[in-house]
Image 1 (cartoon, rainbow, N blue to C red):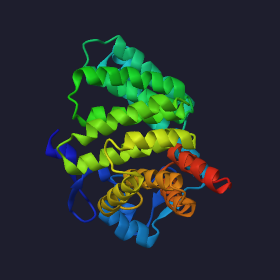
Image 2 (image 1 turned 180 degrees about the vertical axis):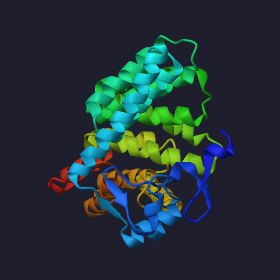
Image 3 (image 1 turned 45 degrees about the vertical axis):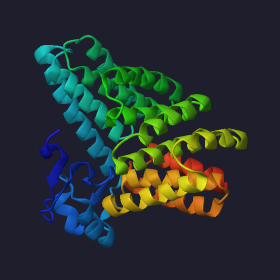
Image 4 (image 1 turned 60 degrees about the vertical axis):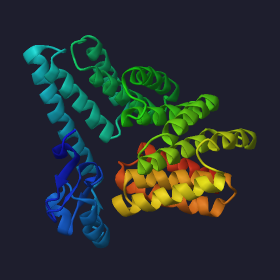
Length: 337
């Protein structure tokens, strides 16, 4: 991957920054004030904190405007796909790519049932085109498993993700970031699908892979993910006692796991800001560990902040917002939006 892909220039301040951290308005809202001219291209995290958060520069659209914009965006994407289909049929590169774009658009608008159907079609088309790059099939598999998980079909999502992961293990080196991501997702899906033993095995594998990685910052990030997955997979005190034995593979004790997560959270918050997917996920991970340690008040406080962050970043009723709300409802006994 070259520098052009990894980095971008902020149109607001002109600084160079990591492209993956670019902020845009969440779906169903628009920027106002200083950030208004950049609502389409987005801005760097620094400008978002300086202007977006400080000025409160994001307002929700009225419901009728939200629906109109959603339908117009979907209409344009469907027209592009129909044109590609008419020009060359279903299996051309352009037709498959525009169909994937349609799936991504449906995902962004929260239309999960249609998204699952569309992404499933993309996967089937990839099997009809064995000449395409194998990594594209892997990406399509991952996209479909995420859509299935968001739609609550965790068992089917886990089945697809494990198929993709088996292929990744054959073709990727143990330290490859894509493989780490696959291990994380497979473990999380196993926990959600009601298979905690599978989830713990996946988390243990992730922890062992992470413990031997030469990059210290990446190693700490991956270990924190393993701790999060173990916490999420355990449904009883007995299971948590077993999980702590696995944690000893890469952290000294549960207090060490919490300390590690706090360090990672501090770094991520400073680098990406509070309203960032990576930061919010890390904060919720720490909340889970603190809840297992019996610090319910701190766990609720951390999870509340993660929930507030997801509310700002996702469309109404977003997948990760619902996850954070579920933990808060469990710990507080109060339903969350």
